[in-house]
Image 1 (cartoon, helix red, strand yellow):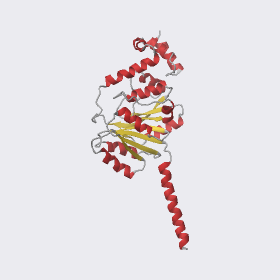
Image 2 (cartoon, rainbow, N blue to C red; image 1 turned 180 degrees about the horizontal axis):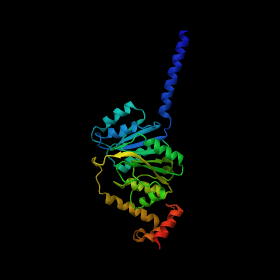
Image 3 (cartoon, rainbow, N blue to C red; image 1 turned 30 degrees about the vertical axis):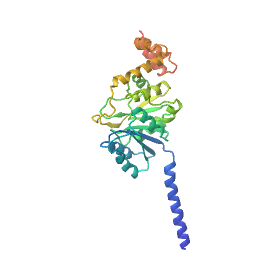
Image 4 (cartoon, rainbow, N blue to C red; image 1 turned 120 degrees about the vertical axis):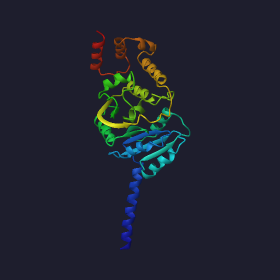
Length: 290
């Protein structure tokens, strides 16, 4: 009798250990990626907002970009309590683009959900964006709305119209398919100290990615938080504008820069990758080339 009891207990222990091991090695559906720098005071709000998500098949990768404060201790407290949190550090402060590339390279999920350390994701965010991408396989990236900020257009054409002028898509409110970025070898430009997210989306756009946004709010932004990566945004935006112009007129970017609205649209129509749907572009040509 005792032997049979011991056997049952042993089998139960083996089953439990096996389940724990499986949970550790199985591929999560979503990888949440967050870099942090000198935000030990407010990063907990960002972390807790991810742990409070209603969808739970995810890994949460946090990269400390060489913070001189107690960021390591703060994050490790969370990591010890939740095996989904994977904590990494840079050997020194290496900047946003380098860190975004590194944290993204560690992701194992089918989808990548971007999170910033001074924002808070609303509880339904992951579920809503995941369900949208699962139901719309033609869409490569989906944004959610940000509380208190201008609404992001829902359809690809309107988003693309904005992206070739400025970043109207966002960053820490976005979930995208890892496979598309990998297929076209898209990464963050490490020569940029800011607006690296804008160029990332433009690269996605020029590779044929389709964008969308859902109507629901998914993020609260703490715009009053201290910015530790100091730079002049206009200085960082100009290389991206040059990159956009070069895509449409490779031999002489200034041709696109100086073109009228009508001529710009004609150059866009001749581009190697069509960033607009046919009907949308024809309508723009009709309106602007009278």
